[in-house]
Length: 429
Image (cartoon, rainbow, N blue to C red; front, side):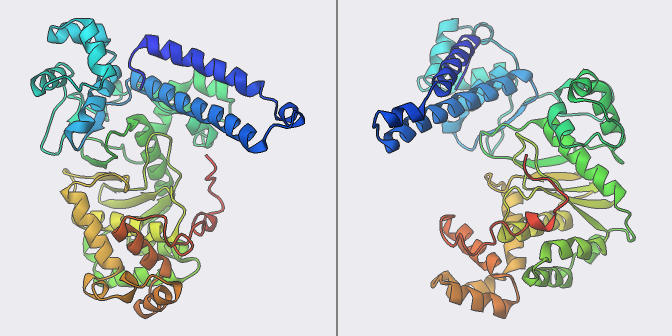
């Protein structure tokens, strides 16, 4: 991990040297010298791997330095050191400045961070956290005291939106047809217009985020993605208002029956539309790691899905997870937005949602004695799914989650079967 400008410069220089080595790597010449092709490939792969590793470190450092990241989460003390280092960098505090704030020498902070605070006691860790204005709560979640994003335009740093990525995805096409350099030059005006023309301003003040432990989440990328979802939802004219009462057991049962259809995900969109729920599919932006999200805006319900994992089982689990949130947790004035990375550790709210989504897909009382729990062959899974009237991929996915083994049943979870149902969406980013 890069912790200061000196390490940043050293890493940049090292990447340049690796790039030179890769560019000068001549497999043809080595082949002519009767070198082993296996060894040649291994050497090149090692260079490529090291370049990727260093590039990721540089990207992480630049992102933290940009100040767009102000929410970090750790579930135990082992993860705390990295959080403290990331928080210091994101606040643009040098190691020297942090040392001054807690009354030690700069070299001490350098040693702490080099060894991931292994020699620091709890008192010192608390001093560092306090100096960084971090809160520590019962689930070890650390958040900066400053607001995430306000709907007051003067509190938004417009140049921190991922303008290049938004342009590449044609998100400005409705009102801008210039070049990328021109878009970058006018980034503030473009992002303001994009933000202000979303049919209802996104609110992070009433949001719940499920993010991976120690993960970096770019709040401006999240807001941009949410704006895109809401803008597309606005264009979908709804015929019926949303009511939580509609999300009853019959609704869920009828929805899950659609999973056995080849175009089940497409039919799910049409089905939910009749209940006043817009389901919008859009790929996630870098540094968001989002699987799905749900928004309650002026009593209108919108679900966003990224299809980050292109599998049948994942589609239905994410969809039901967001529907449970909509039914149980979204209320005007309290929680109005929920963003989910379903690979992240779950708090009580998310654990309960996971459990209820599982119950809706395959009832617990049936699953407890289900043969696929013990005999995991295609024939057994197919027969159980047929009797339950669900897609076999959902059964296979449940087995994988329950066993925490995602290397099994890979040919039964419907890999590559969802995105192709949305041919107008470019998932190549």
